[in-house]
Length: 140
Image 1: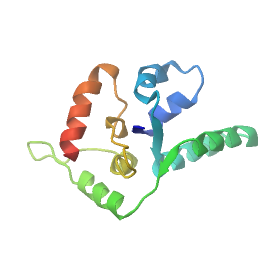
Image 2 (image 1 turned 90 degrees about the vertical axis):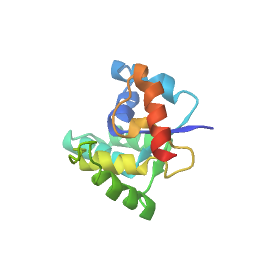
Image 3 (image 1 turned 120 degrees about the horizontal axis):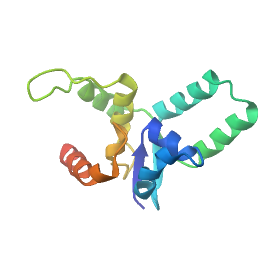
């Protein structure tokens, strides 16, 4: 079965029942194994802490986390992070990608089959074809 790696925003949108922001992404995750980076788990726990979630809400989050693949860090992820941290535009300007987004993107593909363009940014449905081509080209 195919898998997709979701960034924190997309996973959060899909996590919240009735959140319309998740609607554009549902077709991209339907019938697929959902994976998230270890960074996403940390960001979700941070959000729960910041908002003062009670025990029941925290347990519900942990149940949802047990239902997905959590991509851990390893040397390959760390190497990819370094590469992403040094990306430049065609005119040589350093790309500005937030550190946690770089970690999530570096996790992309660390587990078998988790190749997806959703790691760097939420993917608009109309952009999915071109983003899939770009991701395939980057990994090819």
